[in-house]
Structure formats: structure tokens, C-alpha cells
Length: 193
View 1 (spheres, rainbow, N blue to C red):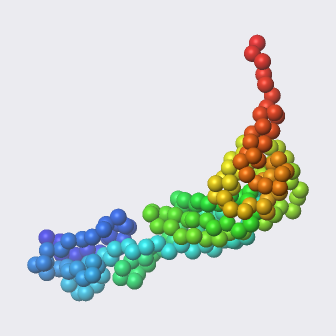
View 2 (cartoon, rainbow, N blue to C red):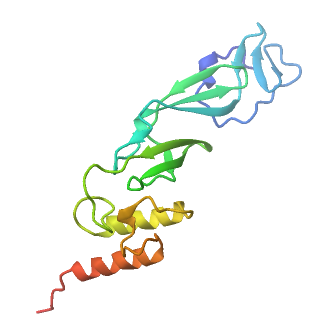
View 3 (cartoon, helix red, strand yellow):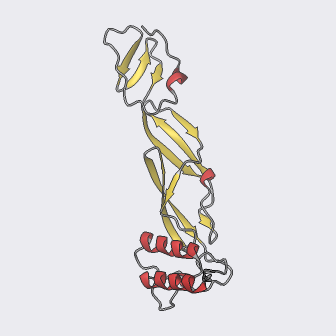
């Protein structure tokens, strides 16, 4: 029979869904899913959600990644308590560093998620059509970036001149094909000896 449990003993057990206590237990009781000791002190409360807070810049330079280390997370428990923590294991989806404009990004951790808006500024240096990364070379990075943009931003995407690889005024699958052709044309073919 267990007589005492330190409050912090179960603090990192976030995967516990519920606890069952014998109705004749003199040391502990449950109320609204929260475990109390005989002195009415909370021993354990289920985690209800995670709050995400971003302390970094929400306006990013062209090509800049979101700083995962600028997110603070908070485990929130049913008894009103919380615990702040940092992690580098966040999942970020919906962000392309080579897409100029506002992007709604989903940040996820441990089955919880929240949306944030980021704005990527147009670069202050000239870019050529198809060179999304701005490195002066049209390569696989540009191809993958344009593919991400087409998948994530399937609405009107006319604010990115460098995405318009075939310079027809539209950003679409034809631009992907054009970048593929440019990559293929720039590859040196080495003949077998």
C-alpha cells in the first residue's frame, strides 16, 4: 500500500491518461481526474494541452529559417499548474524560406499544435527567374523549394518573380518543368571510358 507520493514524482509522466484509486484508500482520492493526498494536496493532474509561445522575429529575411530555439512551450495541467520548457524537437510545417510574403505555419509537439504567421521579406539583391535560393545557381534546392511553394500556396502566388522560371506571368507546374530542364542542361555528362 502506497502512503505518500511526492508531487514531482509524476511530473514528467505526461503519457498517463488516468489513475485509478481504490475507493477505500485512506491516503489518496480522485476528484475530476486529479489525484489528491489525504491532506488535499495535488499529487498528480493530467496534462490538458501545450501552449506555444514564439519569442523570435516574425519577419524573416529571404532564405532565413524559423529559429526553433525561440519557441517556449508550456505543459498545462487540469489543476491550473503549468511547466515551461524548451525543446528542439518541434515539427514545423507550411514554411518555405524562399517564398516572399505571409505564411501560416503549424508548429507541433507531442500531438499538440498551434499556428503562427511569419512574413518573409523580398531580398535586397537581384534574383534571376528560377533561382529561388538566391545562390546564383539553379539547382535541386530551387526545384524542391518551388515544389513546396506550389503545394503549400495553391492560391494566387504572383508575388515571387523568381518562382516564375519560364517568365510567363504565372507560377505553376510549367515553372517546375522549366527548372528541371535548366538543371538537366547544366549537368555535365561524363562519357564512360
